[in-house]
Image (cartoon, rainbow, N blue to C red; front, top):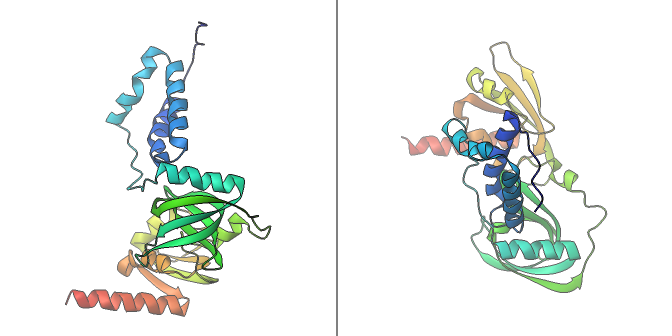
Length: 254
């Protein structure tokens, strides 16, 4: 057997390998899990002996917590990809989180994507007559049919997601304006919340965040987590909805 080549690895590359192993969690329950684990094992075998034990020692001062992730059923995930690759319609049994009901749906898969660690399928829903997002871990059963379909040229995944703040799409984008107090403003400055995000600094250390996104319950929940440190200035409908939610919450503490 030919000797394995000598591998020189920097500290930065070693740390990158460490984090890559942790990120494999996102692929549990997907058809990629076995191949990724196999590829990672091959990389480890190429490393010198003194390096092989190093990743474990990194746990003493490095950690990565991706939060609670949903693990999809591997067989379901595989069949979703089969339907997408072959452009075949699928029948799915799906449990809706919003209604709590399990229904049978006929779909044309358009795009599989990962958002914040969880896997979703954007697909044409014959029942709704629109593109909908299906959390793959909530698909209880899938049957790939022999009926062919085409993804419309008008469907552009980047545009489809462009006006969404998270997974919820809403009906149309609105100019969302939120004022943050000085304490939370420091945290808001550190992240790019959306590609449309613009920040206007204020004299007291606070800021005004402007976003062009769809107004959804997801956006409302995001604002509410900041409590008194966030004030919705626009649109009026979002300001009214947040105000009503805070009034109900306040009443519970009387």
